[in-house]
Length: 245
Ligand code: 13P
Image (tube, rainbow, N blue to C red; front, side, top):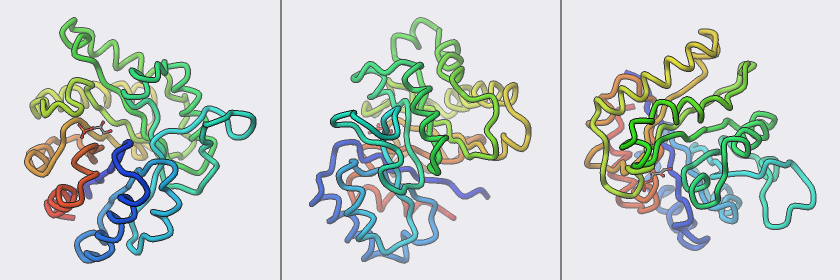
């Protein structure tokens, strides 16, 4: 049985006080949360407080980063501004709301790969693209920004259909499996077996404690990127309780 990763994308749900409160609740239930593969992605401004208070061996990541490392970029945050485990790039909220295209996301991916952090590249089709039957070509273009060589770096591809995010509309296991197989085949055409061993596949979109058990059954799944249910301590606890490893 493989160890499933739970990546908690808190988005902009929790302010500093609520983030600290969440971490104190986690610390109080050390037994449940220890030895699990959990990565928490707080808002940038809360990362320091979360890191300082966390008493359990969970990992901390960044939800996004700038394409630059340092300099005159008012209001932006560099990947090298703080020591973190992972960084999400290409989330659909960045693509849709902040109009980030594949070129910008490629630069962000490059910035993460030039740091010590592990990139999580989000991909997925909108409802319109799904209805137009162009999901595979959309995924192919989103994957086209991947580097030729991973140079022993870890990479996670998170398949998050945009229509499943925050909607409660979770695709069937067969649909997710079909998409992950497509992704896996693209990756196989790009990378050596050694590189492939360093790549994980996640699913994200309306995952909660009620559907997690079913979704874990998808053969290619290594983990889940979870939004709203991960920012509510009781819901998050119910999710983590279902992990066998
Ligand atoms: P929800 O779990 O709220 O649908 O969000 C998924 C997501 O966007 C994770 O990155």
